[in-house]
Length: 572
Picture (tube, rainbow, N blue to C red):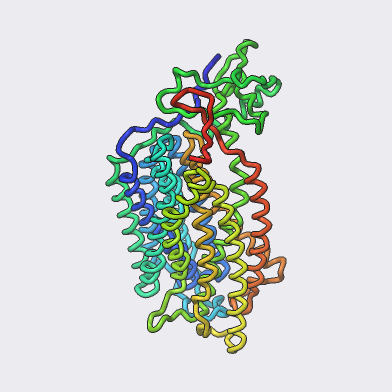
């Protein structure tokens, strides 16, 4: 029986030091890269509105489109990392693209000839009188923005997988360290974000956007240097071909063999022979879902037809395809949470510009407000990793404490609560504007901006559960040949959330008659919008429960003893 050339084997790992020592450089790069990215994610809407003279709605949609594209482009980085380059080289390549993007934005911010005359102090009702950006100026802006999006997308796909590769999930000690890696990866991401939304945002608000982009450029440069410093310590994967090609081969082979009967005995289906497995391999056990794909593993030698990679695939290759199909509903059911996240990064920032941002004699920039959930995460992550996980591990026997899907579900519930709280806070803010006859005023309202911290804090805790739950889930569940692509798929939930945000805002405006249509939040119905998001989040959680109960964790055969015993990857 012919052997499928694209058999699924665990990518060979060059056994170097790895472990926590190698992961330190991954943490450093993630912290520095996210420092620049998050600083712009929370403040670019004010740059678009006040310096590029975009309308309030266009500023919000431009930011959400940029953010969505950045996370969606992680698919490009994932495919390149699994197919052509090692994860380390992928990180360096895309970091250089991001560096170039920030360089272009710096040049545009530095030379005023490349921007329209700013209208940052003009009343919202008079924005139509401001000079719009020319096509050339907009082209420079979008070129820089989407180079940054491409660069950060590639890093988000390859960097978590590079760090996770430093731990062997077959070693009990390193399996526990692997679980902690994702928590500390989020911790480094959080530290970088805290510095970004405070220090870099403060620079942009007080010294100018040119200096803000200069600092962002410098942080990416240092990120590249740090990841390169650890090169001799990494356990580097060797790409084994495109996972997308292998998946397509399964569908093609299953269609060609559609008239063949699937044997009851699993041993009659094609699998890699013992001598061809090598030292590092992963053999996936056959599952009963999507049985029509099992026909791809039926040999046709008895009929005289030639076998090849487009007519015969291994059971492991078929199961790899099934895993991807099973993952899709999980992604779809977490998209709406990221739609809510997009609102916090746009409308909540705009809310802050109407409120009192002073603490004593210090004025807090509105875009720095996300430091509140970040501080919550800064405290909660170590507590979660050092106290909750060990305690839960003793009860459940699972190295991660609770299963990945349970962790994701907790985050979804908390995001619904966050949106409900946001609606009540916005109602109070509007009442203050009405009571003080400041509905059309550009002066800050006599209400502290830190009331917005309630919705931010709750959502920060939700993000701690869901974001890393998704990353760890997709890395653990992905087959050995598509770890980077699996990580990239998890980021797609964030991407589609941002895109959905843009659609939701436009649809709500049309259906409601203009809840969010004006450039004046004091006259908009943003509180109704938040409550609507909360209700939809509850419905979405119900859908997630159905998807999670339907999902089947992958199982692998025992590699050391060559037995048919299975290891539940959900417990690794």
